[in-house]
Image (cartoon, rainbow, N blue to C red; front, side):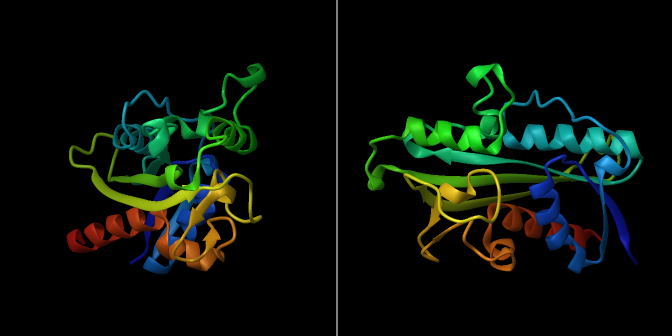
Length: 203
């Protein structure tokens, strides 16, 4: 039986990745943009809190079960920043809205001159499923992907900080990995697969 679920994200890159990972599991994946415009207000102080807020918002708007993620990059030398602010890290620069390019450049600028051994980072993802808006027991999957931050961009794939996120295991940046490979090992893949495993047990 096919399960319809709304993905609570307006980020095209995230939407593609999540749909690619979920569809083989028999999910009928719908984007929240098919139902409504706008985003939930991310007032949480953790990735998990923000993911729950987004999932509940999407479920309320659509009447469907919802999956939401909150994810970002944490840099050891910056004491975990940008963290939950990864998508809006450069918000104040030039008074303009943040985007992938300005966020990435701000991070490079902040780490300028730092040697390779001090550029450790990890992508973190919290993935949440709610059956309905007031679901008292959200299901949570977590994922973390370790790497380091390069001094300049490499690769044209992915999105966000992928062109400067070096994955030693593969000798490539996240932006250089084939999509199928990234969807097996990324923080988002780890979190989604952890979520799907729990959903299967409860089916």
